Image 1: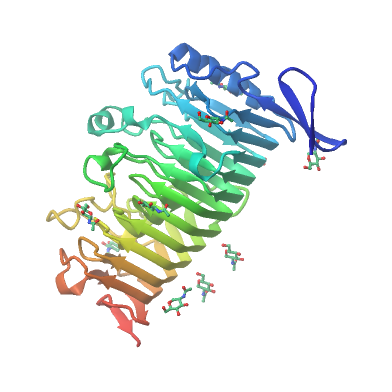
Image 2: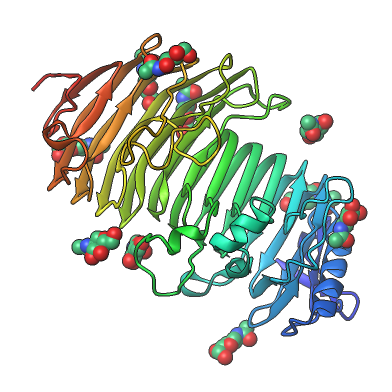
Length: 444
Ligand SMILES: *[C@@H]1O[C@H](CO)[C@@H](O)[C@H](O)[C@H]1NC(C)=O
Ligand SMILES: *[C@@H]1O[C@H](CO)[C@@H](O)[C@H](O)[C@H]1NC(C)=O
Ligand SMILES: *[C@@H]1O[C@H](CO)[C@@H](O)[C@H](O)[C@H]1NC(C)=O
Ligand SMILES: *[C@@H]1O[C@H](CO)[C@@H](O)[C@H](O)[C@H]1NC(C)=O
Ligand SMILES: *[C@@H]1O[C@H](CO)[C@@H](O)[C@H](O)[C@H]1NC(C)=O
Ligand SMILES: *[C@@H]1O[C@H](CO)[C@@H](O)[C@H](O)[C@H]1NC(C)=O
Ligand SMILES: *[C@@H]1O[C@H](CO)[C@@H](O)[C@H](O)[C@H]1NC(C)=O
Ligand SMILES: *[C@@H]1O[C@H](CO)[C@@H](O)[C@H](O)[C@H]1NC(C)=O
Ligand SMILES: *[C@@H]1O[C@H](CO)[C@@H](O)[C@H](O)[C@H]1NC(C)=O
Ligand SMILES: *[C@@H]1O[C@H](CO)[C@@H](O)[C@H](O)[C@H]1NC(C)=O
């Protein structure tokens, strides 16, 4: 590989004299580092947006290390092909939510980055383990109870990639997103590696207490699509760490979200999740998903599979799911949950269920659960009873297998010596599974 400098600022990277692409240094073309004034955020954003929209095949845009480029939301591009974002320094978004750009039609805030129809696009960093490239959403100003009551969900997501193929994200820290961190929506062939999510209210916090949990909706990796591999990542946030979502009905790639592998992930938040499955589209489905070799320290929820209540009449499917070799330490809420989504929206299973009497927790009947295995799972010191596994009477969960699901020192509230809420499930416990969910058959 050799490079030719053909102007002051733009280098051409070549692997042979016929295959060249430009290397565009964001600072060299006029990006201003280290200045967080709104006018600079806007200037940088405008320049970045223009530059991204002019990228050509095999171009690389580089954000140099030891530099922080302040931005504000609304960066949008589509149909980029064979381009690389090399983030060696820091891209940091303003927290000025009053001046945040809004969609002219809906008046809702624009996401920090929104891309669609990407193909062969890489987000990388030349920086190594301890100093990854950073995209920082300055979420702290957007989070909190008061903020939530005022602005609700009208907060930007950090990085959204829709209807795209052949994506690689590596060596990046995605920090303090105001809302969802990464949403790969209807994507095919996505790999994310050595990329961390960190959304926390206080730098030293180690548990998801009530204050920390007000970093609402800071989902880590939300994914729908097919052929996805996410591995060797650390996630700390206050919503789903990973959520495999159903595809959008308009997707061209597949009708199901499927064929995904998540491994060697250290996560703490509201779960390694499937779902919620069952909203908005007529038939939604998630199948052939594996999570393995993961650890969860002081997490709020652990293994969290959820159907979406409140859309009666919709059908869907959660099938061929495997969770294998996962250790969950000191979960403060449900370590294992198979059932309806717990959330604050109308029709959902109440967040207070079952701790406050009369709180609703309806179980949708339209979602079919089949062939879900938990193997070699250890829960250490879950603070409450280990779990909830609840199907609908008219459509029980089928082929649910717990193989070596071991709970050490479980909390006793609220299920006492039953350990799990367990109903309408055709389940089998085998290996050293202990305790056995009370509605499962047990084979030694
Ligand atoms: C881009 O690079 C690839 C190999 O990396 C090469 O096959 C292709 O021809 C290049 N395209 C252009 C337009 O330079
Ligand atoms: C970045 O800064 C660190 C510490 O100031 C220094 O050691 C390193 O060489 C710098 N890296 C670059 C690429 O300038
Ligand atoms: C970025 O460019 C796209 C495409 O030209 C445009 O629609 C969008 O409004 C631009 N955003 C900003 C913040 O300039
Ligand atoms: C998805 O992307 C393809 C091109 O890759 C395009 O033809 C199609 O219209 C897009 N679909 C939607 C719903 O945006
Ligand atoms: C299930 O997904 C994995 C990727 O995680 C893939 O290798 C495998 O082929 C898929 N199985 C089926 C039956 O499609
Ligand atoms: C895993 O996460 C916990 C906190 O959630 C952290 O203390 C620990 O260092 C992480 N482990 C690794 C290997 O990064
Ligand atoms: C159950 O799901 C696993 C993947 O988790 C798959 O390998 C297996 O073939 C499925 N079994 C049936 C009977 O479909
Ligand atoms: C478990 O988490 C709670 C907070 O939910 C914390 O107070 C306690 O110290 C933790 N225990 C251990 C052993 O880390
Ligand atoms: C599951 O645990 C058993 C017993 O400890 C062990 O023999 C087996 O190799 C483990 N399987 C995986 C996939 O880790
Ligand atoms: C199951 O679904 C039916 C029909 O939607 C509903 O009436 C019922 O309350 C649900 N709950 C349980 C526990 O089966």
